[in-house]
Image (cartoon, rainbow, N blue to C red; front, side, top):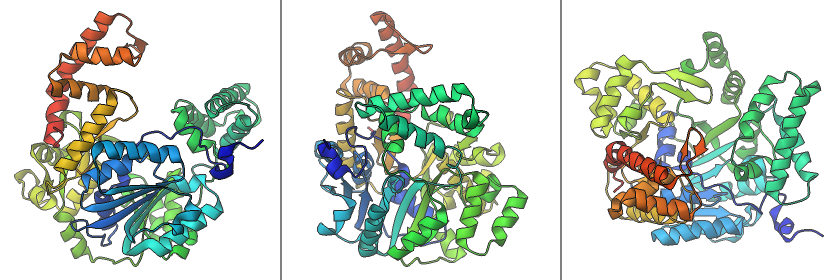
Length: 508
C-alpha cells in the first residue's frame, strides 16, 4: 500500500526533517555585495524590499535574516508541513512580524497571493526535484521577480560530481532495497558501500576520487544525507544547461556568489586563465572554470534586466560599504581554505586590514586612509576583503541600529531553545545583519553568563537533562565533577575571548 506521504512527496524524503542550517549566501547584504563585485547594481535594501526563499526547510536562515533586516518583507516556502511548523514556532517565539511561512508545492505557487520580489533564493533544491518542479519554479520567477531583482540558485554541478555519481546511485539502490525508516536505509546504504570499497574490484578498485568523496559523505549527519542523496530525483547539472533552462524565466547570469570567483589567480594557472580569457561567451567561461576547479557545487547569481555598472561606479559603491571581523582577531588565519584548496594571504598586506577591522567596522575608503595602507590600490583592498569574507572571517556590516530589538528577540528565542534542543548552532549579529556561528554549548555558557548563574551547576544540569556529556580526547567524561571542572575552564575561555567579541558584534 502506498504511504500517505508518497502521495504528495513526489519522491522527496519527508519522514525526516532537514537540518537547522544557516547559509549566509542567502542574506540580502551578501547578495548585494556579490552583485556589485560582479559589476551589477543590486536592489536597494535601505528602503523596504521583498524577499522569497523557495525550499526554505526549517526556515532557520529565513528567520535569522528576517530578524536582521526588519525593513524587508520575507516569505519562506516549503512543501513539507513539518518544516513550516518548525520555522513558524521560532518566528513566533522571536515575535517576528515581517516573515510569512507558507506550505506549498512548487507547482501550486501561482495559487497563492504573493507580492513581487526583489530577491528570490533557492539553495540546493534544484538538484533534488524533477523537471516539472523546475519548470514551475521558472514560471514563478518569470511572474514574480521584479525587474532589477536578484535570483540566487545553488545546485550540485558537473564535472565535479562525475566520479561520484555511481556511488550515489548505488547508495540509493541499497536504500530502496531495505525495509524500514529512512535513517535505517541510510545506515544500511553507507555500510554496504563501505563493504563494496573493501572488495577493491572494478569500479571500487583504485578509484581514489570516488572513495575520498564517500569517506566525506559517510561522516555527515544522516538527516542531511537523507535529503541530499536519497531523494528519488537527484541530478547534478552543467552550468550551461541551467543558464539555458532559466532563460525562460527572463533572467540572465551575472556572476557567482562565491566571492573568490572573480580572482582567477587564486585557483587557476596562467594557461587556464588564457583559455578562460579567450572563451567566446560567459557560458563557456563558466564551464571552463568548472572544469579547471572540478567544481561540485555552484552558487549562481542571476538578474532580471541587469544594470551593468561602469568600473568607476562599481568602485565607488563598494568603497562606501563597511566591513567587520566575524571572528575574534586571535582566530583569524591567513591560510584560508576554500572548495578549490588553500589560499595564503600576505601578512604585509592582510595584516593591516585585519588590525584595522579589529578596532571597528570600516569602509574601503576608511581603510585606504589608514597610514599602514596609504597608497594601496582600492581594488587590492577590495580583493582582500572579498577573500577574507569568502573565508568566513570578515563580513559586510550594517550602519543602522533599527534591527537591534528584532535581533535581540531572535537571539533570546534561540537561547531559550538551547535548553531543550541542541540543533541550532547560530545566533544573529545586528552589526553584521547575518547569522554567526555560536555552537550550542557556547549558547549555554552565554545563558549562564546572562542569568549570572554558576556555569558548572547551571550548564551541568542542562547537560544531564539532555543526556549529554563533555568529551576529552574524543571520549565522554563520565565523572560529574570532572564535567563541572571542564565547564569552568570552558567558561573562563568564553568570558575572555568569545563574549567580548560577541558584544562587539552587538550580541548582548
